[in-house]
Amino acid sequence: MKKRILFFGFAVLLGISLITLASAASYGFGSPREVVQSIIDAYIDIFEPILDALFGGYGWSGMYLFERLLLYVLLASLVYLGIERVPVFEDGPKAVRWIITIIVPLIGIRFIDFEWLTTIINQYMIFAVIVTSILPFVLFLFFLYNITEDHAMMRKLGWLIFAGIYAGLWTTSGNGQSSIIYFWTFLAALVFFLFDGIIYRRYVMLRHHRTDNNFKERELGNIRHEIHKIQEQIRQHEIDERVGKNLIKDLIKDEKWLTRQY
Image 1 (spheres, helix red, strand yellow):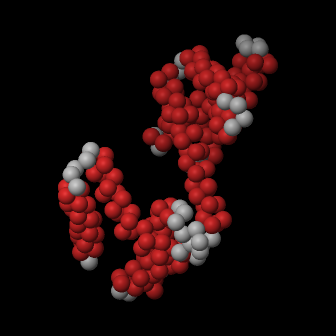
Image 2 (tube, rainbow, N blue to C red):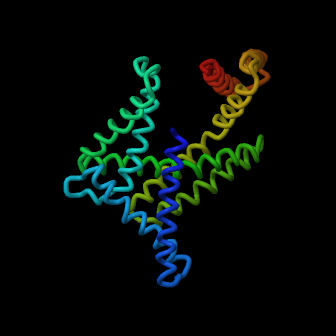
Image 3 (tube, rainbow, N blue to C red):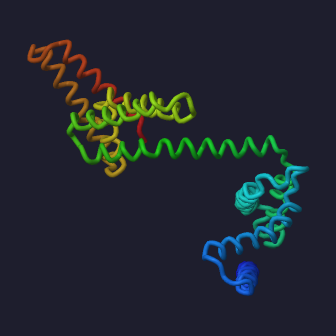
């Protein structure tokens, strides 16, 4: 059944393309851009009225038509996955599942109003902005931590340069939305610069913990042994008491963090 539907859809699309090409040939072929544009226009002329009739719109049916089609496909996919897990429909005929999958999201998209539609689209836009904004920071983080390894000064220099670049972008971008993104990226880079030692230690421990099942127990033992060693050095006056207590405080934080890991 699926193969027949796919074959039928492919045949329809191929037929429209051939008819458009034949029409273009009768008037003389233009540039490749004009030929492709004529094929796209043919698809729009055929399918736009059908989608308008299906999705409704109450006077604004032509707006966001492609976006509503994408939302319909997304909803239909989610509804189909949900139906497959409902015991009532598990052993029932597939036709019933497909009817529900087609009708339920169609009703939702058809009767959605303009305000709700723009709200949904804005949420996806915000999601895309956040993801694409965070991605350069995440890539730089892994690049810096994997390249510099134990060279703390190189890591700090990298974060300082990164923060300086985004500080410059923030101060020169005016008051637009991009300015907010530049500011928060600069702030995050500054935090990583200031707390580089703690963050890097946690990163290394988490990386080893995921690849070594016994790493957690061994590392906890090493931390407790190091705490006991520093305490003994303080008692023997081999290390300054204030420095030793600060070292123990950091080790205790690492111990508590590692204990909470799965």
